[in-house]
Length: 183
Image (cartoon, rainbow, N blue to C red; front, side, top):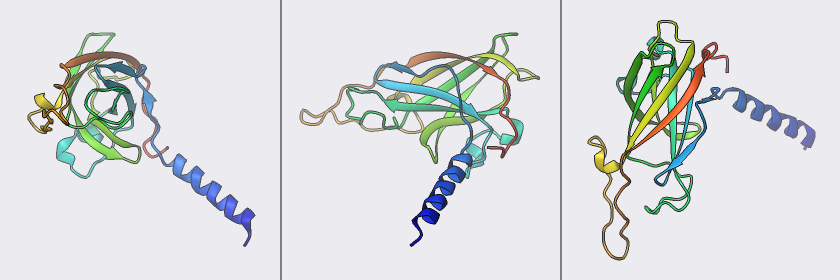
């Protein structure tokens, strides 16, 4: 067996796989609050198998993802860094330059990097390049009318009540997402 050829082939496969992933641009820095760790990124608008759940990518400026994971020591028995299911996540993006804003909800979805809360978004400016403030409002599963999660309350396996709704602020400069497919 030619181990050198196998090694080169495996290395090439890794480069192709990494090169095929969409480039995520961080929005601010991850924040930890109420047992959650929340990171926010954007990338090029994407297509999904259920288009009725998200804005049409052709009419969007970016795809925003909130990576919401369980923080270490959370009281609900979720393993650290595991995706936090059942949340209702709302966003408001405001232009720092003119105060115009857009609001909506992020939808749970899955991609090669795991689960996240996402949506394709049209930024509030006619020329979207600029500075923005993002406010995420995260509501617990008990406040999500679309997807409730039952909580054990018995003495042996019970967990405490869910967290109170929380708000997180981020800022970013949008300079575009590059050419579709150029990742």
